[in-house]
Length: 351
Ligand SMILES: *Cc1c(COP(=O)(O)O)cnc(C)c1O
Image (cartoon, rainbow, N blue to C red; front, side, top):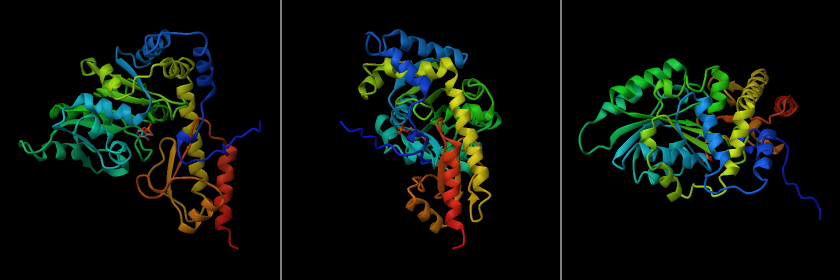
């Protein structure tokens, strides 16, 4: 049989274009030996949940699902009734990229959109929405959802999270964190996972493994354990209970036990910093938002965008602010960044 490998060289369209990191592959291999109980009643899943409790220094409830859309949607559904609403940024993934799944999973909880610089919710914007109406005709605000790192690759500082926590407390709102790039945020802020979650009032975190180096899998952490009541049933009903759960939990253990989760994120951030620095030396390219984690958002002339596409480069221009987004991952190679920069420069060279 002829080898058929359609995979091309690295692209910077998204961190989920990457493959599986070696640590994850090794734990997948180990989990593949012999047979174990199904549906999460196995030692891998127990150990992975314990590893999260150690890492976050708290006795949280831990669940594993297949993807981020499900994690966010089911987590939000557990925080509110159908007549409640969720305050989020207008660029939030739950608003722009989940096909209405949060509303679907919650039987109609409405998303209320706030604007805010650099993809971040401001306490004032949240408060304005929380106090806009108090009458029976309006879906009652119940949850704040924020993304760390944000959809624009920016970060909430501890102080910013504390300010949002105060608003949440004032108006009895729960707080959900979309941690699609939580590891990148931890690496960039140089804080502990506890520092930017339960210590600043986050009730539930969706921690993405896929973008961090896994094939498939997200962890949902309930710091307020009461909110996790019957959550296992919610996952099962939504088709998110893996029968061979060990192939999600063992890779997670691989990331956590070896420290790869943080190394992978640090590498991605370092690559993005290098890419940013190279890009900014090219005339006609400007940064759209500060680069703080593993994504770089820039504007570049249309001709340059076309030139890059013609040369086979893949990237998104529809995310967030309408510029070009490049994202680095655990597997990004500096040589490949150099190749991208080379091709951009070739496109601007006077002919
Ligand atoms: C990637 C991502 C998710 C998860 O997306 P899925 O494709 O459903 O796994 C959630 N939130 C943000 C901000 C993301 O970038």
